[in-house]
Image (cartoon, rainbow, N blue to C red):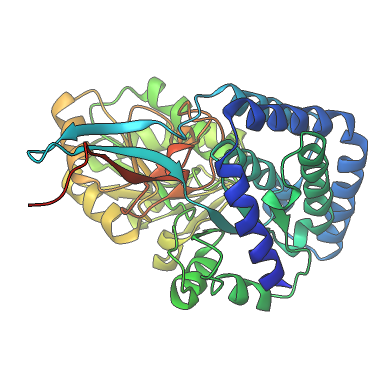
Length: 417
């Protein structure tokens, strides 16, 4: 099965690479229109997945990740339209120059080819990835989680319907509709046809792909994100940022998981913060110092164990750790972070610059919520993933991250001397 999908995807990728921007954009606009006109079918399929998830006793966080609502579906359609409006990077000349021999060299941006994406739970990923890949002339093979099988199947049908209506190859977007995990192992070894693998899921999925793939893998998406509350920061300004980072949508990879608080303000800041967190039903996991400060006035309070410092909660659970310096905060992030999104809340410009220079994460913030790590928020349109590695792409991966380049050499009947 995968061999045939790979062949079809490779052929489609060659065809897509020759398409003009307006042809790809027409297909994207048609996808957006069909997402709205077929919304009843899509939402009905999604409800089946939600019912199965509930019967399997999946957590509220997991159910939220797979849930589509009319508003979320409408937002997805609008996101696709926004991608259609973005500048098409394909064919762009990155740079160029003439060497001493007279050869005129330039680098031209081209599609990667065929991309394999393995992801869990979130059906919006199906649309985001398909739209970004089509915009950049890449074919894609999708393998979503079993939790969203009904939803992903109909979303793929909608996409392929739009491709057919706009006369683009329907094999540009294919979906592995069998939940058997052996297809993951087969996909990551399909190096004859697939040019890049992007796993979007937990640490176990990332590890599996890294260990078994014979294709380059873009890792990322696991977010143990931190904020460091510096002693100079205004309490009233910091609290809304922390609340937003933790509670706006707890099931995402850019959600705050550990708050580091400077020891000089812990006695006064933590009791005040805990009142606001309680209003948002946040459960606190506190280290010994912060537990001693909070134990008399906080209901949802538990002692913190070290394993939880590496925990991507994806829920309304928050670790609280007191540190005695910015350096200690940075060392904590280096030890327990995943290189996703980390930030400092401060009024000291020197502390801000030191934090930015010392924290080696894909995205580093000063006085802002970690929730901004998102392709849409960064002006990239949607994102295919958030990369936490350093080769090829890092952070939210938009259009340019789905391209490579070729060298073009023009000569005037040149031969090398």
